[in-house]
Image (cartoon, rainbow, N blue to C red):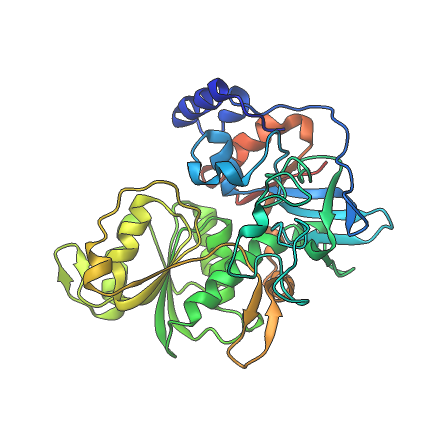
Length: 388
């Protein structure tokens, strides 16, 4: 459970700079025995989490590195965990769309077929049947996956095929984020174009797999260049279809070689058609702006905070900077529509993304689990999850 305790939050910020993952011990996170959340009405169901992943945004929250933009979009105390495979009371195994959309907040959705993240107005986040919450795992009313019991709205429920393992199922939510990013990238790619993926954590690897797999529709990348720091990341990036994998500091040289571009200062004269930034740091955004071609597209799917970046190349080169938050209803190139989770289910099975789950932990060993996740790359791990 994560509480609003400013002093401990500050302690987590300081300790996490020294030792990755130490915010779990010093911050406002604790193991607690609490009553399970109540069901607001008949549109809600109780979920018993079976596996729940630890993602980058969870680690940023625990380390005190999240943007203050999110403060009005959460309610304390909340239980973390939004990458969830669980079991309903009738025994049905499900994965959860993490987003608490209009229907979950007791408001009218844009249409009967809308996914929770669809729509052009976030007014549903004001008032309604729930405490403030952008997603489960950040809402006091719903609980989260790092627990023995939470609740979910019917609009969030996706059934898991019987043949899919729990490890594969817990990868559906992050894979959906990767698919969503790949489809946004595909809109700026011509056949045979060059795509760059910055970062080979869970979302970056899922985006690489999505760019190279027909399960996501028609993503016509001819060359995929990826950056990765650690051996496991490099191995999986290559396995999932990256043509070139380099250390982050080598990406400008790699894109220059692949596209035959000249250098103007530290920026390429030409460059890649599209860059997926799965990191969201000042450094990764600077690299993205340096290697994307004029009038190319940057898809920002790594959760950013407050960063200091020179936007002159964005202006001068007329580059598109596109945000990429979670998933929803996708408009595919062949004119059909699909929820991202349906595409992600296929991708997870066909690309065997369940192998990215490196270790699981019980809840009472949460400090070790979070430390393992924070040090993941250096310990040859990708996805760490709780097994409540």
